Image (tube, rainbow, N blue to C red; front, top):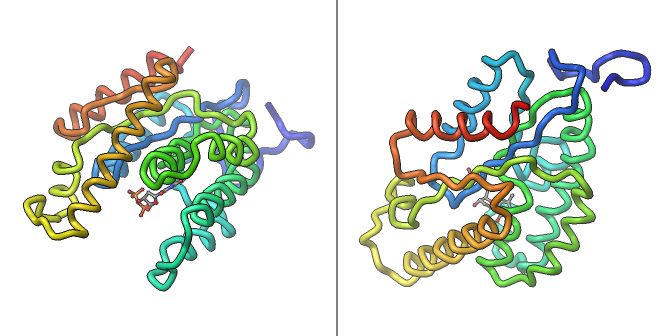
Length: 226
Ligand code: TYD
């Protein structure tokens, strides 16, 4: 689809103007190697002659990056779960309107590092915010802009913590709390994926990065290249 004046929006190097793009999201607990997989997937899709845009959440827009700073600021330990959920949704609403929809409209494939499933898994399953409320707020944030495919990089919290350089054998209160939180988030992701098997590709993130990248690309390509 072309814009009214026949020009591409600034910043997108689209080669495939004839059809709509695809939205692919990658999800998983921290430490599953998402960044490496996103980079591999983006270059494999580009090799097929398709324009690819990589994004991360929260962020990707000036307003989204400002919201990210608020969320990550160490002084904000008093942030309640509801504020946190709303801020993630606000950053997402901005990203969808400012970047994702315009990119998809010109045939670009968008690969997003986290999207609404992160809020369901972290704020919902992890912190106990009502899942239906999250669904409603996110309906407002993303509307019909839903991922075509979501790759869930599944890994145990112990293996993820080891990758993050944290010793899994440490057992003080905060370590145990952190691990239990990650376990709830992981179980949440698996429940969300089981609910939508058509959209989700669940892969074992414990395998070597190269083999994993091949599995992710072939499953994405098989489902979306038509
Ligand atoms: P980030 O540094 O981007 O971590 P990662 O590289 O693992 O994605 O920080 C994002 C953190 O925010 C991560 O711990 C997951 C969390 N998060 C939520 O809790 N809810 C959300 O909706 C999103 C998008 C992220």
